[in-house]
Each structure stands twice: as structure tokens, then as C-alpha cells.
Image 1 (cartoon, rainbow over the protein chains, first blue to last red):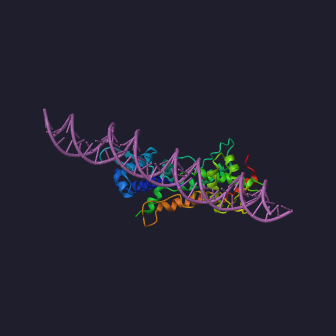
Image 2: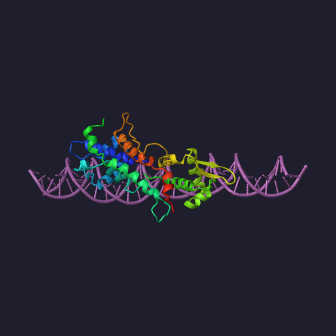
Image 3: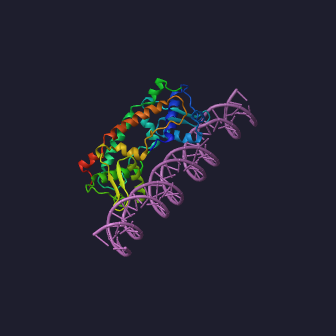
Length: 132
Length: 132
DNA sequence: GTCGGCCTACTCGGATATCAGCTGTCCGAGTTGCCCTGG
DNA sequence: CCAGGGCAACTCGGACAGCTGATATCCGAGTAGGCCGAC
């Protein structure tokens, strides 16, 4: 029961991209170096984000990734869902036909966390310039 | 990023124990059968709960487990913490000396969920008699 | 009758096997910009 | 000069290896209650 490292990489990559003002595409290499990850691995993570439309990828020379225009709309929850998946954190594995009482409660607790994450946008971090 | 099955077993076991009115110790065998798990595996989970003082174990003939007296105080969060551990769900693996901006936000979201789980007691479920 | 030893039904805890998902690597394919060459 | 081919710098995506932690099993040890036999 932990967030995966991939989620961490995804969040940081999004921040890097959001803070890049050059309007150019940023290569995986550069992003990977800053986070000390292998470029190939990071590219897999970025591909997931691209599929969700949060970032845009460009092949070829001077290719790379850049943030999608709708930056203001991208919340932490979106990023986490893109990496971790959207399924519930709790599975009641007893094959109860009737709804498991625990599941309801766990689900509502989960919702509370998601609400909080939905209100946190990457763009807020950029404004506060919280990165070194 | 999922709650483990062990957590599910722990929650259900706690409910079974809480609903047992016989004032006797309930054997692992019985608990395991109801949840269709191996008794040895379940015993490891129950040992963790016992170490946290939520349940009491008794060796020997007619031994088993029974709920601790302070049932009213036992929340979902206590049970989850006993099984999953108490460490934060999010680790920022960049060795930033300064506090990572993400960690703060993730931690606060996590807290929201924990608050909810802290207010949910096993004893409430027993009262509502939500189990088949 | 009663005391003590044995047997049985339990839990406890360590060692180990198994499995799934996360992490990470490798490589071939596709794409694009740029240079270089031939007309 | 300039059009086209080739090259190099990229990403993309599938296949696969390694590792870690969750899941599960096995077994020996300890413990408590009850039975049974000897005195």
C-alpha cells in the first residue's frame, strides 16, 4: 500500500515540463537526468501521461515532450490515476453477492483523499515557484 | 497502490470476533473457514492484531482469539495501520534536502482519508448488524 | 480419591516456496530535421 | 542553386530480466486442558 515510484516520477516530470518556458520540446534524457532515472523507463511513464492528453510528444530530432495547453485543469489526481489506474484501493475478495459493508466505508474514505488531490493543480505549484 | 488482502482478512476477522457473543476464544480454523483462507496465513495476520492489543490470543486446548475489551475504541485506521504499517503512502525519492513540495500535498490528502477511517469503528458495524 | 505424567488440541514464530506487480533494460521500428551530394 | 537521399537524434512500444513484497505453506516448539493410571 504505497504510491509507486512511477507516480513520483510522473509528478516531478509534469512540474519540470510546466516550468519550462522555452516553448520547446523537452527530451526524455534531460528529464531523466534531473530525476536520476533511466531514460527508457521514464519514457514509459511519459507515454502514459501522453495517452491521457496531459502532455504532447513529438518524435524525431529535437523531439520530446511538452505540457498540454490545458495545464490549469490538470490535477494531482489526474496524474495519479494515469499511472496507478482508476480502480478502487480496496477489494473485498469474499465473494459476497450482497455488497460488503467494508467496501462502502473504504470507498468513502478513499473519496475524501481523491477530493483533496483533485483540488491540487500542478499550475499552483508553478505559480508558487516552489521548486529549487 | 492497493490495500492488501491481509487487510481485508483482518477487517473481516475483527468483525467476526466482535460479533461472537459466546465469550469464548474463537479458533483460527473457524475464522479461516469462514473467509476461505489458509489457517496458518490467517494466524500471522491475527498475530499482528494481537501485538497491537486489539485482540487477545490464548494457547492450548480451546485456545484461539477473542476481541479485546476496548472494542469501542478500535477504528478501521487502527486495523489498517496494524497490517499495512504506519508509514506515509508517498515517498519522494529525490534526495532533496529541502522538503519536497509534493510530499506535503500528498500527506495532507492522505490525512483526509485517515480522518475518515479513524471515525469508523468496528463496533458500529456490529450494532447495525450489517453482516449476513 | 488424587497426584503426576502423557496425550491432544491448540497457537506461535521462523524458514521457505510461490507469485504478481513494480522497476528497469534492450532493441528494433518509426519519425523528423539536417547535411551532403549530384545534377 | 536546389532536390533528394542518407544520416543522426530522437520517441515509441514490445519483450524480457530482476527484484521486492504479498501471499501462502510447512514444521518444530511451546502451552494448556483433560484423561488415565499408579499409588
